[in-house]
Image 1 (cartoon, rainbow, N blue to C red):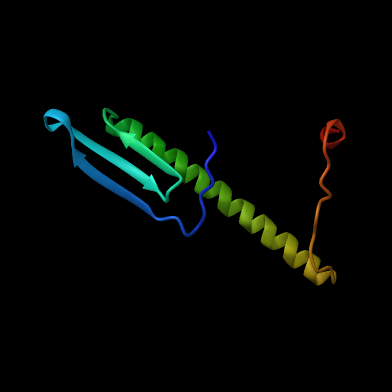
Image 2 (cartoon, rainbow, N blue to C red; image 1 turned 90 degrees about the vertical axis):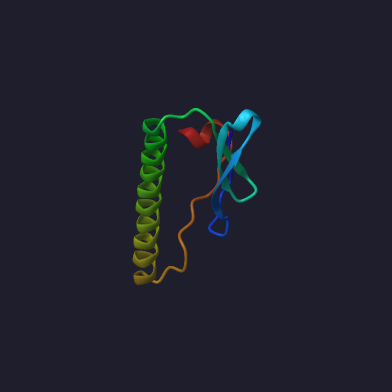
Length: 93
C-alpha cells in the first residue's frame, strides 16, 4: 500500500470505546491514512515510532542533499539540475 502524505496533512490521535467497553485508538494522517490500534503492545508502538524516526532522518538527508546540489548548481550558474526520465530497460542500465 502506498500513501502520499504532505506537509499540510494533520496528524491526530483519537480514542474511543467500542463494543463491551473495549478501548480503541486511531492514528489519523489527513484523509489518506488511518491506523487503528487495538491490541498492539507498547513495544510494537515504539518500534513503529522508531521506523517513522528513521524515515524522518532519511527525508532530512534527502533534503540536505538536494539543497547542496542546488547550491552547487547556483554557484556554477545553472538554474536547476534535472535528470532525464527514461522508461524501460535502458533506465536500469
